[in-house]
Length: 179
Image 1 (tube, helix red, strand yellow):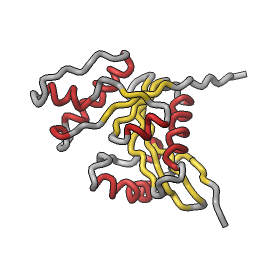
Image 2 (cartoon, one colour):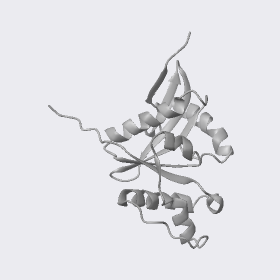
Image 3 (tube, one colour):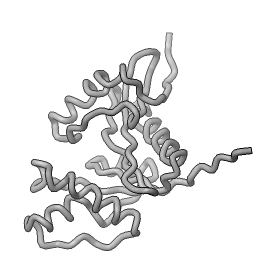
Image 4 (cartoon, one colour):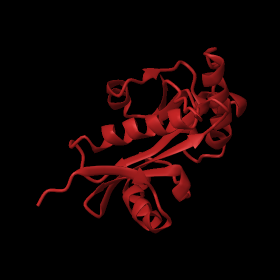
C-alpha cells in the first residue's frame, strides 16, 4: 500500500524525529546545529513516518529564513514539497521575502530562489578581520536579514571556511478577508 506525501506543522512528538533526520547532516557540516522548536517546523510524512522537515523562522517583520531542510528520501520531490509548503507558510505569516543559506544552490534555484550578493558570513568575517571584502548592498529586507544572521555566523566555529550562498525568493503575501 502506497501512502501519499503529506506536509503538516510539526508537533512536540516530532522533535526527536526531526533531530534524528538532522543529525547526520549536522555531522557532515551540511546543516548547522539547531534547537528544534516544533512551532517553527513543517514535516513531510508518508503514512505515519516523518521523511523530511524544514524550519521557517521570521527574521524581521517582512523576511523569513527557510532553514534546516532535510529529507530522508532524496529524489522523490520531498524537498521541493517542503520548500513550497514553507513558502506558503511565510506568505500566510505576512513575510514576503524568504532567504535560504545553503551550498545546494542549484536545488534552490530550481525552487525559484535567486542568488543574493550579500551573505551573513561575509559580514561576520569582515567584522572579525578575517576578510577585507565588504558585502554588496542589496535590497533593504535582504540586507536586514543578512545582518540579523551575521551574529549567528560570527559565533560559528565554521566561520573561517564558510562559503554558503544566500538565496532569496519573494512570495505574494496571503490576504485573508475577515468578512
